[in-house]
Image (cartoon, rainbow, N blue to C red; front, side, top):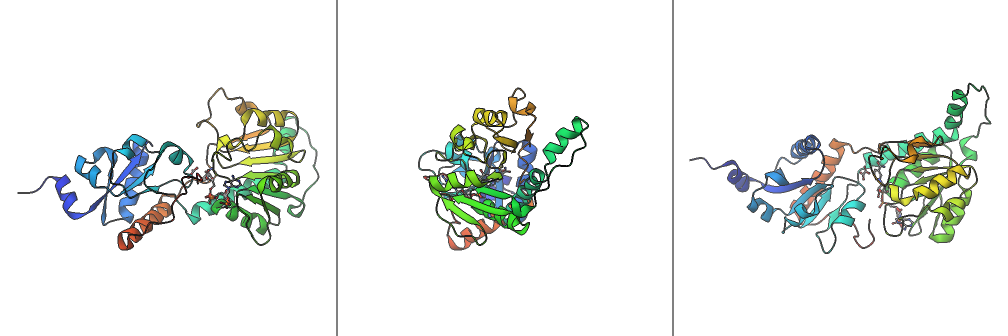
Length: 325
Ligand code: NDP
Ligand code: OXD
């Protein structure tokens, strides 16, 4: 007599819960690539797990999970996020939950560094101004600023900020960087604390935001700090929308304090149709594409984390829930 499929799963492989609130097709794509990289594990969507499988799961792989589904897995030892940024997860999984491991993918850092360089060039080469001139049929060369005369200030010097710093340095830009704790990075003028931030804001021609969203960074770029920015400077936000106060940003643009702003992230995504941001002539709106997650590299990193845990019982580096990142 053959056993039902769910019994078979229990006898042969350990179950890992895949808990998401993403489109079913996107979840299926993740399930397939993760299963390929983890042939000795049984990866099941939360919805297809039996009550026993939910009881027994030690690991959940998550992407915007419903907190109630995570809570319905009572014996989780740890949670692996498929996203690099875990601010939403940390915010939603309140209390004493299992440790969270975020995605730390060098390929994602490379993609983000590429995006920072691409949009830095966009601003350094005055492309927004030439676009405005074209609309008015104006033929007017603008002064060229070589990278060595352009200071790029990075807010955040973590995995992504440090990769961006490297790429910008390589392209000849002057790079400054701000982090919570003091850092030393060759060729980067680093600082921390409020006075460090003030100096960086005043000196940067282009400011790039790559800090996680935490209680400390929510509303970081408010009216006061935006008015401390160099007059005519530009801003790129590739981190999270609420790090910048939208109304203050629009005021700074309208006052000419900021020449141009590139936004990839917003308080609400997709950006609502009636947002005034869409129409501002000095704003570039991107649909959260600066560093898309590569399924293959992410799955291989997740698989390596899980295999190491199965071998040694040791958890990968976990997120500091108190700190928020
Ligand atoms: P890390 O945790 O590696 O680095 C975060 C950096 O921010 C660190 O240098 C940290 O300082 C600094 N930081 C944190 N809080 C503060 C603070 N209060 N004051 C000053 N500096 C602070 O994160 P990543 O580099 O991997 O990612 C950064 C963010 O990028 C993610 O949290 C996410 O929001 C966003 N992201 C956006 C993507 C997109 O497609 N737009 C894709 C992926 C991520 P310290 O070094 O001292 O700890
Ligand atoms: C991420 C993101 O956190 O895409 O991976 O923002």
